[in-house]
Length: 289
Image (spheres, rainbow, N blue to C red):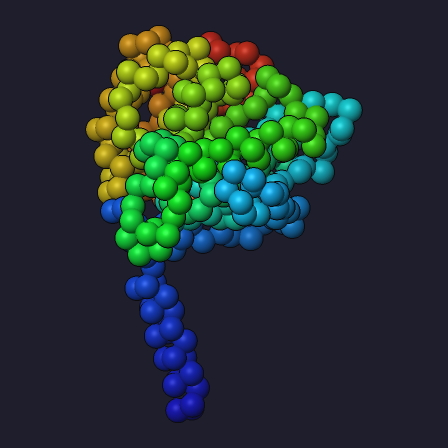
């Protein structure tokens, strides 16, 4: 019995040590411990692929989900998913409900690395944002490489599969939400709609004029301790002022992560929004500033 108790204590201590060792990057606690994936049968269809990222001089991985209903003879919608700070492509593509909904609705899903876990997809400039710890070894053009990786992966998947050109969507959480808005604003004709959850964006909402014709859904918790709900509300207010087709879902008591990592009902809202945008049903998208 003593040996059994000792073994259990060792396991508990090891688990606590892992949690305490989770890194803090740029003021955001690593999201890895709040984004632990829950296994779904659809996860068996997720592939890890690699390509030669010539601009960076390194091989780069990405995650890809292809639904069982995919037919090369028919165009399929595609979602590019962007992970948060301290997270990765493998985690974001396993958010609860994401691949289940993609399977049910016939979506391809791809998740880019964004060069590494802290590239910000260019939303904070072409350089590197942090120089502490491992970040000190990041390339000087980290932001540019992070954004380029997303565009490379998107081009690779569009070349390999029959993707509906009117059904390409961008979705991201936290740092990925900022990347979604940033990349969407840089490529306003590429995406049929954007989905930003708790977007940690630091630029000026006036830049939304670039995507005034692109539908945008924003989901935000009002008790998010990492992304200020007041900032998100300002971005949504600008969407309303520009007359944009948009939907804003503010979750009472909602936190920063679980509202999307472990809440399939909110992931379904993103898919519903994308479905309607693809069908051009803009009058049904909602306008909830």
